[in-house]
Amino acid sequence: MFRRYRIESKLRFTLFIIITFLIIISAFTIFLKPTYVSGSTEPRFDTIKVKPGDTLWNIASIYADEHTDMRAFIYDISKLNGIAGSEIIPGQELIIPLD
Image 1: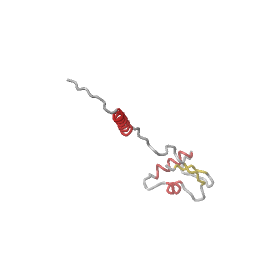
Image 2: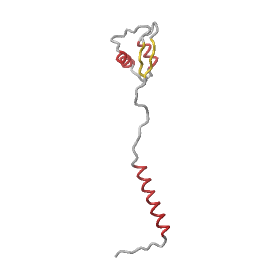
Image 3: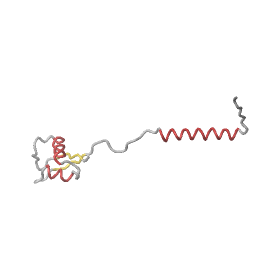
C-alpha cells in the first residue's frame, strides 16, 4: 500500500530541502508583503509678506494650480491666518498652504 523511499544521496536531498524552503519563503515575501505608501503626510506652507496692492485673490492665483477651486483656496488662506474678511494689510505675513 505505502511505498517506501530510500535517500540515496544526502547532499541531493539536503539541496532539495533548502531550495524548496527558499522557494516557499520567496513566495510568501512576494505575495504577502505589506504595501507601503510613499509621500509626505505633513502639510507644507510658505510664508509671504503682503505688498501694497496685493489681494487674497491675486496671492491665491499665484499659488493655486488649475485644478484648485480659488474660493476654497482663499477660504483656506483666510482660515489659516485668522482673517475675518478679505482685508489684508501691506507688511502682513501670510501663511500659504502649498498642498
